[in-house]
Amino acid sequence: MQQEIYQWGHAQHPTLVFFHGLGSTGLAFGELANYLPAHHIVSFDLPGHGMHQP
Image 1 (tube, rainbow, N blue to C red):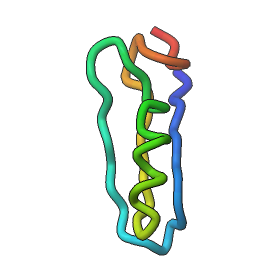
Image 2 (image 1 turned 60 degrees about the vertical axis):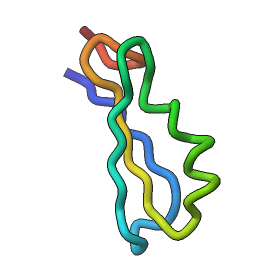
Image 3 (image 1 turned 45 degrees about the vertical axis):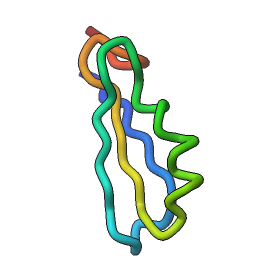
Image 4 (image 1 turned 90 degrees about the vertical axis):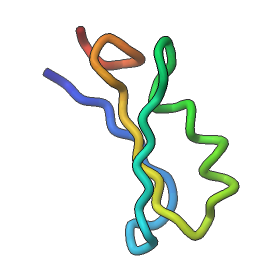
């Protein structure tokens, strides 16, 4: 099973992990990451969403 993981910002910064809602993908947080430059943002596609294989 392949898991798509998305990251924004520097790994040295405090990490925030975001979970998307129904019908969305982990990429939904890319724009939000622009407003949180002092954080390392991590998100991923839940099973059956985005690039994740069901």
